[in-house]
Each structure stands twice: as C-alpha cells, then as structure tokens.
Amino acid sequence: MSVLPDPPPNDEPALDWRPGGVPVSRRFDDPYFSLAGGLEETRHVFLAGNDLPARLRPGFHVAETGFGTGLNALALAQVATVPVRMTSFEAYPMTEAQLEQAHAAFPELADLARQLRVGWGAAEIRVGQVTLSVVTGDVRRCLPAWDGMADAWFLDGFSPAKNPEMWDAGLMAEVGRHTAPGGSFATYTAAGHVRRALQAAGFAVQRRPGFAGKRHMSIGRREG
Picture 1 (cartoon, rainbow, N blue to C red):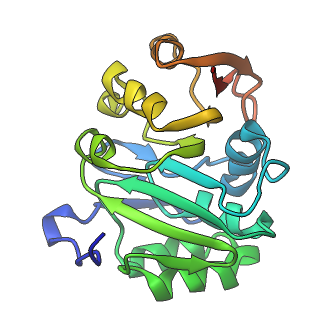
Picture 2: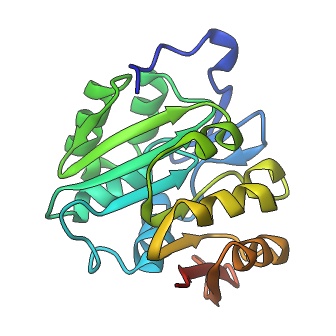
C-alpha cells in the first residue's frame, strides 16, 4: 500500500463545528460522533458490541468503514494490551489540522491522538499497540480489492439516511466476504435494510440497546 498523499483541496471534508468540539460534515449534514459523548458511544457500540477488548489477541484484525476523526482507532488503542491491526476505509480523510481540532475534545486520548497525527499520511501508523492502515477512496471500490480478513468490523459510516451508499447490500456482502469465520460486526444503526443485508452476508444479527437513549443498535457474528 502506498503512502497516502495529501488529499486535493476539493476532497478535504468541509466541516462545521458544534459546541464541545464536534465536527459536522457539510457534505452529509451529519456529526462525526455523538453529541452525547463520542468516546462513550464508541465504547458502547464498537468495543462492547464486538466483545472487545476480551477477544483481542496478537494479530487480531479490526476493519472499519468510515475512519472519520480516528476516534474508534484511538479507543481501540486505549484498551489494546497486545499487538493488533486495524484497517479503516475513508473516502474523505481529514487534514492533520482538522484531526487535531477534533481530538481536542478527548484529552484522555491526547498521547495516542498525537501518535496518530505524527504518523498521518504513512502507509502504516503505530498508535499504542495498534498498527493502523487507512485506505483512502470509495469503499465500494476499495473493499473488494482488499486482501485482508477482519476478526471484527466497526461499521461507522454516516447514517443510512444521509449516506446510503455506505450501507447497501453489495457493500454489506463484501463485509461478509472479508470477515474471518466467527468474526463480528457492530454498528450504531438498526435500520431494517441494513440488518437484512448483513443477514444475507452471513451474519447472525441481533439488536441491542443503543447509546444515550437510542432505542437499538446492531451486532452480529459470522456464521460458519
């Protein structure tokens, strides 16, 4: 994988900033993380939803749709005590300055966030025990070409109503094809068409209580 170039100006995400340092995408009119607490949401949805850190072992591979601010990677690095890998797919990577502004909302992650920004743009970035690769481009093109297999997925694109391409049946099928036997996913959405697509992709899908009053989220394990 080649070193990531600085994205052209037109590809840099246009952001608004809400109180508390929450970036909001102008393209999708959606916040990058919960207004009720981004780190707490990540722990509830993506870590607990994938039974992490309990399942982590050396070489465990997490994959993600929607890198955003890198918050999920930082939360994983905070709890990982053995070397693990993470591959994240992102169409519109933030600039280092945008990342720094977003990371200011999470002072307890400051040291890890600094490691992420120091390595930003490299083919691999070491953040604590996590070796991170960020694949830039449309995930519908990049994921089919990826030769990796994930033990756990963080499905964290903008909402299905705002960014339906990130949740269509074809992409969910690719998620299934790139999941190791017994692998898992977690996502904040419980949209019916997303759950059905993940079931068709080979996951046993369940709904669980969502974060901060959200009624449901979804988790699943790859059958077979």
